[in-house]
Amino acid sequence: QLQASGGGLVQAGDSLTLSCAANARTFMTYGIAWFRQAAGKEREFVVGFSRKGDIAYYDDSLKGRFTVSKDNSKNTVYLQMNNLKPEDTAVYYCAGTNLGSAVIRPPSRPQDYDFWGQGTLVTVSS
Image (cartoon, rainbow, N blue to C red; front, side, top):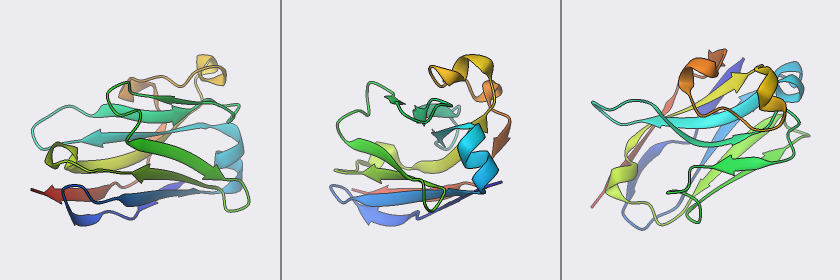
């Protein structure tokens, strides 16, 4: 239902854009968010859209460097990452939630998401 792509090996300070493609029903019904998981760490919320799809909520520590957008014609959510740092190295996942409260604000807990894309690895070298 979700397919993430766009990861790769970059140097510190570079930019990278990830894509999360969904089918039309998923794109219109579910709140879609990006998470990341570094080796040995828990999965953490990066940014997500409400189920209404009109507002994006960011993790405060990433706002300013990361920007999320969506293309309704392509049923795709993008994550633009600028000024990447080695600590951004992680597997990045997109996920979908049908949680009622997500109509207003996407949840930040992984367990509140119903399905996940396969993940795409981002490696930032120093």
